[in-house]
Length: 383
Ligand SMILES: *Cc1c(COP(=O)(O)O)cnc(C)c1O
Image 1 (cartoon, protein in one colour):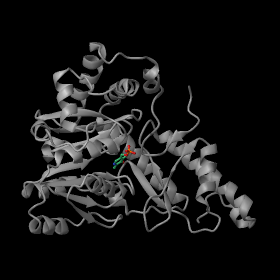
Image 2 (cartoon, rainbow, N blue to C red; image 1 turned 90 degrees about the horizontal axis):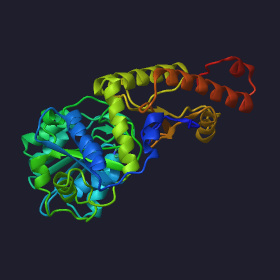
Image 3 (cartoon, rainbow, N blue to C red; image 1 turned 90 degrees about the vertical axis):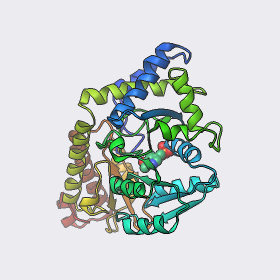
Image 4 (cartoon, rainbow, N blue to C red; image 1 turned 180 degrees about the vertical axis):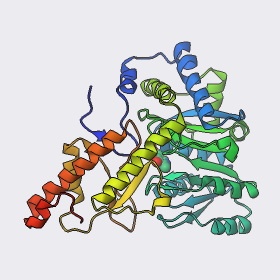
């Protein structure tokens, strides 16, 4: 089965045909072949990918990535604890919103979306608010593509002996890091991001001691991180409630393909090449990235909407879709724009084809909305 288009979106993303084919079998959730062979293998592999240290364990959780964030916040933050959220985008804001829903005291450090968090501000808050026990931060803030300095943020939080929760949803598997070296307590990601699986579950890789401390604290039955972990630990990978078997089997295949590709470092290089080619090509076509280059991640890039009156995002989107590429609208509050992801089963040749599709889309648009010959004759007009 061929796809109609490739997804230049940061999850779900384009997967390999072998990942999709892995879903064609039904699996028994009682059977060792599934629990030990697939689930336990996934849990061990995830820990190995996340750290060389051995005091970490992995928990898989049904639902989209947000369910895993909610399970973590709702289980890790105790009844008398308080959370500090470093928030410079939609996903940081979502963590604060989760805390709000769960009636968890929360200091929402809301920061501009297009600059790195000011660590002196975080320091001042930690110094003046001793009741804060947990710090949560997003690694790659998919809103803009900004890569937050999780090493510095974790080090600062640890200087105050705080528990650190990192939403590495869109970066884990695509950017090398050792969460044990960084001393992160809980790291959250999901199946349909850089591991290149299909949607359906998320996962938490956490210190075993930190997981044990979650016992009895969950504010939700199905999102009880400790009970999910305990069930998987005691029953060789058994999920508490119906597991998304097809998705899990596809994820197992995706992990094998990550290994075949050469691991996270090699995948990071591919994503990095994709992103560099994309930004250079887009600049050549007259588009302007939202962030300065040193803030870019190899995951997703935001671009300003061209100010030219002929530019219409919906039309642009449709013209690209017709040519086999799907992009993302922008999410930044103060600027109109769009985002282009370059993770997933995407290779430099796809970026080349995409850039040429953009030329066609713009050209088509120009030809129909403006008849000045100067525009028609120019193959790479600047907006
Ligand atoms: C994708 C993503 C999530 C989770 O989103 P879902 O739609 O629930 O899967 C959370 N945080 C970040 C940074 C993400 O990129």
